Image (cartoon, rainbow, N blue to C red):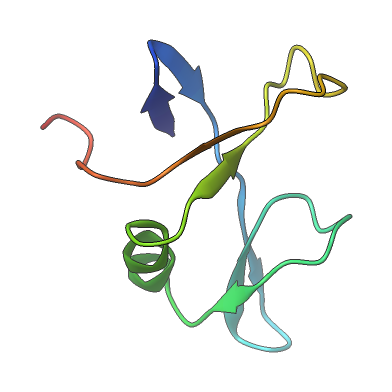
Length: 73
């Protein structure tokens, strides 16, 4: 879950047991894989995470953010 500009975004994390890797999103688009969830977090502290509004998936406006603080900070 990511809080960005007073809006909560749920981030889907999938595990591919065949390859032993974690992936973000639904898998419909190409995605990067990571050996662990901590690696996903570290990566997106430096590279923006694409945020998709579940209520308006067709919106032309795409939001991106860097992960900065853990929940409850």
